[in-house]
Length: 420
Image 1 (cartoon, rainbow, N blue to C red):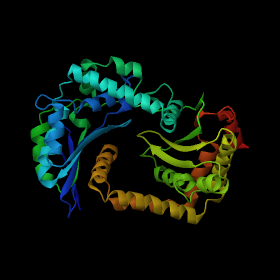
Image 2 (image 1 turned 90 degrees about the vertical axis):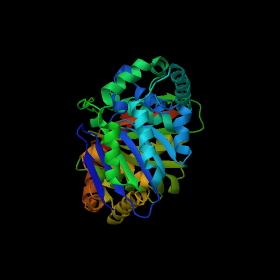
Image 3 (image 1 turned 60 degrees about the vertical axis):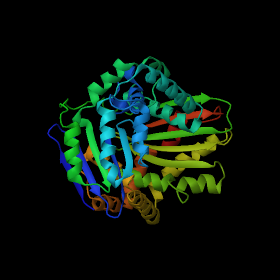
């Protein structure tokens, strides 16, 4: 399997990989514009725009968009993150031209019908309400806000309800005009695809788009803070985050391996100590996330209000202990988990197409998978211990609590325990 990449004259990048033996393909356009590209008054518009993608174009109604793909047994969808909005399909080999034609149509010829805007407004407001009713979802939005206060990166992807209620066609077209230029488009495809045919069709569909220049966003600033919301719930929800590396940082892979060893599976330290030995919770995990210029290592748990203080204290203690005695075996196990997750994920065309798009966005190319595996293997136990020391005692932190949390320690309490 060989990755091929071509850049059109207007800056649009096309990356593909033919996967022998597959009779289907995943194909889509990843736009380098998401929640962090929004101004305050635009918060939520990238997600609103994603919803409107399937609501009709100059040549197809919303039903015709769905039927065009589903008539051939395919699948079409989209998502919005803080740095990307993606529009993608999975179809059989003979239908890749159709899939790209539909994708180009929704990107280049949307009509933003007023009635459809009102329909999706209601859908998104319901989605916001559902998120607010899901404690182990909404707590991460609150934590993000505490870690990146008063910044686009800290705002919810769904947006504030007040914004969603007033967005109109002009707002949608304005965001597209600012951020949907060919330089922000990455056409990625994997599976039963032919790169030359993709480039030829992409030139016909997108080649006339004029360049618009790079889109800027506000640099991230990690800000320590605490959100505590008391509510009568069955569980107290606890989310603690520490500033970590961005995805171009030299410590990126170390952060990933650390979070796996700390709380990434049933054999991890937090799971074994807090759930298995003490029975203080059902769910506890750690994970590392990264953006272009920052990142976070996050710990989440759900427990009873009475047990929350003990759980939080043990979490800090386990972080400190990891800096002292993280073992060769633990690091080797975490490396194996990370490599297995990466390689197993790449057995599917959809995950492979998405990875290629993200690699092109980050690096401008797709590094060989062997290079990535080598970087994982090069992380030593000493590297992980040093990183654990920084997380346990030095990294700025943010805290979010929700539910019966009156007995929970404050962020200041946890900070004092970190340096004790």
